[in-house]
Image (cartoon, rainbow, N blue to C red; front, side):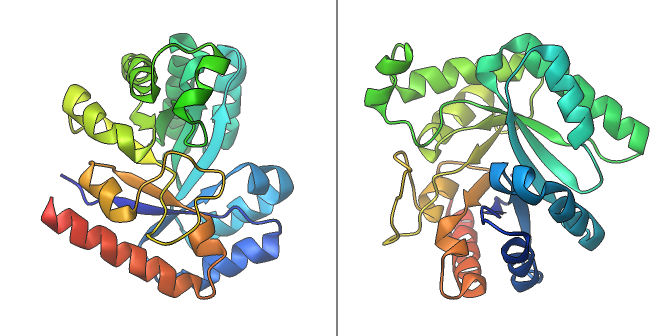
Length: 241
């Protein structure tokens, strides 16, 4: 089983803040996530900087549209250094297949490794009681499992889910079907708008392959020290599982 990876979300409001974090964390074995704030605010500059530095990148685009549009967007997003892309599993099988095919084709054209496409299941900001309002029957686990089956059939590398669903997904789909888990909060840190959360140790114990941490690092007094603390907690949990 591969060691779990830490993903640091560059969810900050300026290019200077984002590149400052990249500089602070340059010696750590991590992946940087570029989400909506960075993509829409200063995406070209930030992604060019990460590519120039040779940093592995997760482009959290959460694409959700008709298959042709999603395929075109994926082709535009694939570039050297991009290891992970996300689409919404609720977009359906054809849409996810279009994303996976586009990632493979564009990577082949560029002569680079194909990025992993992950299907976003149920956002970690959604509580069980919110699902009924969305017209989704059952609890988070049931809905995540159903969407994960769609993502697997579309040849996605795995799904984005909360750590609470990771263990059951691994047991059902196997270790090779990967889980990417936001909602990671070290003990004693605020949950913010996240509702289905877990500590880094608990997420690793549940089998998470990628742990996404944003505000606990970006808003820390010493982001580098906090990152190292989380990496150490993850390593200890991985040795124990």
